[in-house]
Length: 112
Image (cartoon, rainbow, N blue to C red; front, side):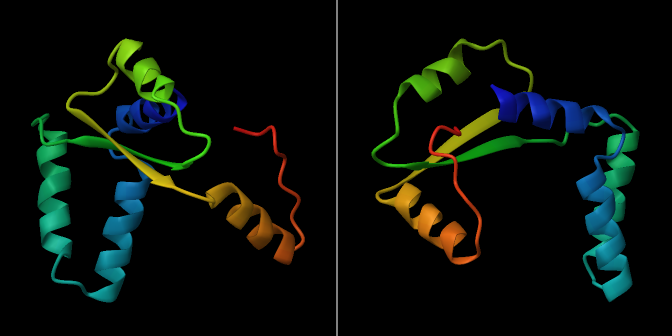
């Protein structure tokens, strides 16, 4: 599954880019969460297993198939523990097409 493979690739870096970005933004804002993020990053450096992984799938209800979950289940696990959440929204595809159209972007109906 592409999403899991991308997440796996990102986590292979010592500090994924997103984590560094969040830490920098918290520091710049003087957030009280800065020290907690710094401690977490330090724990990762020591190799502690603190990570949890989640995939959030958003699908048009009319296009959904349980085969999506079967593909994830049948793939060799790259990340542990992995939680998959699926959000089904009726009429999502036409809504996206209307929003894109309103800003002049064409939606490819064959694009998954």
